[in-house]
Image (cartoon, rainbow over all chains, first blue to last red; front, side, top):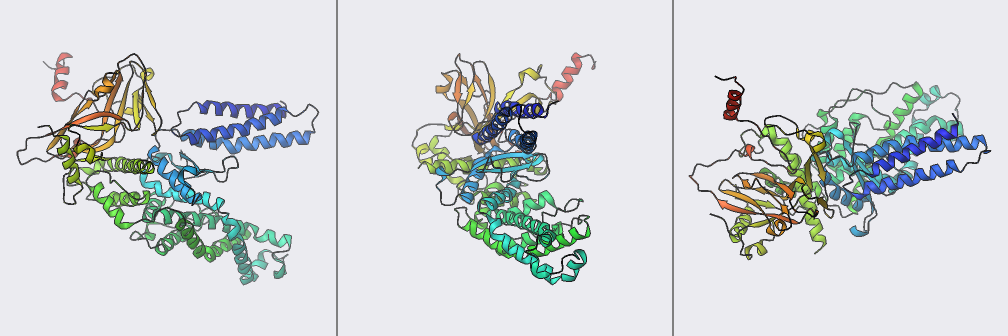
Length: 420
Length: 208
């Protein structure tokens, strides 16, 4: 089998799959638009492969084949994500309000009708909301995927704030802003724990060359990257809290508490530290924290790492503490500069009164207020007991439908206001 | 007694008062000023965004009493505002009202198609009675009995409801668990009740 033939065949198969997917019933054109962009990418890959002359340099042919193979690996899961965005399991009523919030966050000051932000709202077969970040072909797309089993559960919508945070981290170039601070903290940590460092890396004996010597840099670069990843995930959490208030904390606990058995990822803060940071951010923003919140979680085990990596992870974990306050402040600042309304407990209570009568509230000021009211209704053990004999059996289904209808009415009102 | 549009508007206005415990609610609420002055005896409702059609190719027939889950025999579609749904001649689809409705214990309602649509072949509803205490969106049975495909759009006026007062005895209470709708069109159960089951067994020779 010729290498090039196989590469061409693989790309053609992906293109065939894309054409098949283009026949899907897309409720919103953003998904179709994303598919069209990916099709262009693969057409380009195919053209490049087919244009290779018979006598082309074998290494160059290998390079082109590898590039196209990378694209197949990289984009196939995304195609699945796009396909699942058409599944009627999804709560499509969320699309408009989430697109609105995404556009407001990423393009503050730009008129709604002029915004370029697009949204892929889908579901995932991973039990955690996931996004495909920084896709070169889809620079203006925000991707939000809920676990398939929860994709019509509006109570989890606040977690989309975390996913939006990833897009904000990229577009606001937050890494550029935080990398120097984190790097300085890494170097400070090494200097503070010089004996530990030297026992692991005896070849590096000059602390003044930690940033200039290539071999020395190699010793802490992974720690830097882990710390940056942890900072990014923390920032995303704070964006979610700042937009959605207490409902973010409740949705987070619903999906993740008390935590799974598997070891924590190096890219996320230690599980209990993450929870404590959520609480810290909520308090900094002036939001209520659910009672005994931290107690709902238990620590995830640490990963089994080689001694040097263990040291690097301890370093990343500690360094994160140095930037948490800054991340909390910048998330607040970024959202404050948008027209995204701050969660309002009084408005949430007003909405809750309507939900208590089993009707949607009208003239809501924000999605976050609806979701905060929704969580209060969900937690109310006496909800609807005066109007139904056994609300327990049907409560969740009715409440989810009611909340989604409330969100749809909120969007209808926004559309009509926009035309006045 | 059927309520005038004026009276419906009064009920809807009262729903906004904080002490109203069992209100009539239609959300989104129509323009009450227009409603009050309309002189009508009904209120128009709009088409919602969800549709369900029966999967003919996968279903041999529907049998009474068989607990077939709705996803196995229906295909759900979502049509956002601004998009359209084409109802071809002879086709049947379940739609849903955009409005979420809550009837108090003293009101009942009937859903009627709009004659302007009927004259074009679009029949809106057959099961028209809405019980006191109902909560949710109203399912609509949409059929094109004409000869030309019809384009329908979420948000357009699709039907009207007439609301009647129920003669009260003073001890009314409604367990809403029987009358809770949904935001999507649902088939609901078609089960044989006790009487029908006994009659069916007699016919099979199990009862002497």
